[in-house]
Amino acid sequence: MANNLNRSPNYDDEIDLREIIKILLASKKLIISTILIFTIASIIYSFSVKPEFKSSSLLEIGYYEMPNGTKQLIEKPSDLISDLEVLLLKKPDNQFNQNVSIKSLEGKVINLEITSSSAEQNVNLLTEFINYIVKRHSRYEKLRSEQNKNKISFDIENTKAEINHFKAKLSSKYQSQYLDIISNLEKEDQAIENLKLLAEISSYEDRLFSLNQQLKILIQNLEDSDSEVTSKSQTIGDIQTNTIKSKTLLFISMGIILGFITGIFLSLINNFIKSYRES
Image (cartoon, rainbow, N blue to C red; front, side, top):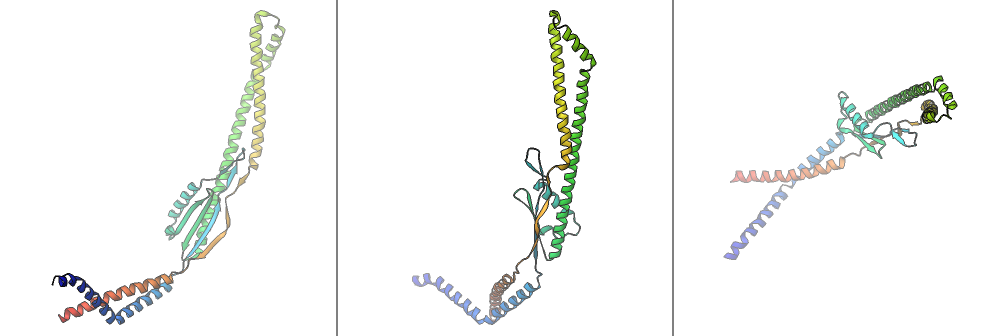
C-alpha cells in the first residue's frame, strides 16, 4: 500500500496532463479559429501601419587656419549639438522630438538623422538645420574677423603712441645733450654721467627701432586678415533617405503566437465552465 501511496501524486499529474491534452484536442476548432482571427487582425494592422523613412545628412564643421599652421574649429561639436536640441524644442507643434538623432563623429562631423512617416518632412527639417548651421557659422566667421581686425588696429595705435613717446625722448633737446656729451668726454669728473646718458639714449634708439619693426608686422597682419584661410561648414554629400523595412512578418508571428495562447486559455475556460455547470 505504501508503494501505491508514493506513486499516486505522479499518477495524478500524468492523468491531469492527459486530460489537458484531451481538452485541447477536443477544442482544436476553437484554437484554430482563435489563431486565424488573431493572424488576420495582425495582417490587417501591419498593412494599415504607414511606412517610415529615415533621412540622414553629414555636416563637416568649418575651421580657421591659425598663423602657426594649426586648425581651430569654428564651433565645438558639443556646443552645436546643444544649440540644435534647444532649437528643436522651441519648434511649435513639432512631432519630431523623439525621432531626431544628432551625434558627433570624429570630433568635427555632425550626423543628423530624422525618422518619420514623411520623407519630405524629413528632408525639409534637415535642410532647415543645415541652413541654420551655415548661417550661424557665417556670423561667427564675420564676428571673429571683425574682432581680429579691431585687436590689430588697437595694437597699431598703441605701438604708434609708444613710438611717438620714444621719439619725444630723442628730441632736439636730447640731441643737443648728445653733442655736449661728445665734447665733454675727456672730462673725467663727468665721464660716468655721460656714459649713463649715452647708454640711455642708445636704449631709446633700440626700442624705437624695435617698435618700428613691430608696427610693420602689425600693418602686414591687418592686410593679411582679409585673406585669412577659412574652411566653411558644409555638408558631405547629399541628404540620404531610406525606407525602413516593414515589420509585417513580426506582426503576423506575434498574431499567431498570441492567437495560440489565447485559444488554449479560452479552451480551458470553456471546459471549466462546462464542468462547473455539469457538477
